[in-house]
Length: 88
Image (tube, rainbow, N blue to C red; front, top):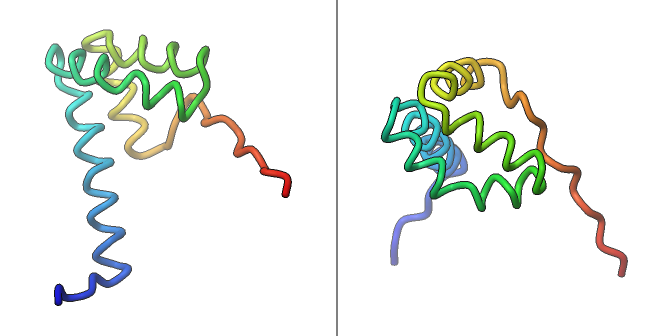
């Protein structure tokens, strides 16, 4: 039986993945490739228009770097779409 992961460990693991994605986007030209690969994720998370705008800004080499560096401390400039409530 595998040892259980604590909640803290799970949060660190999930947070580490988020930081790794942001760091990869911050690379000047390699980040553009990562952004193109993750454009679908942004569209699902933010909606079509906001997701494309966010990915477009991230794809611009030095502008995307600056935006993501600021977002590491401040949070997203372009907000995620509201969660939909499911009727039962």
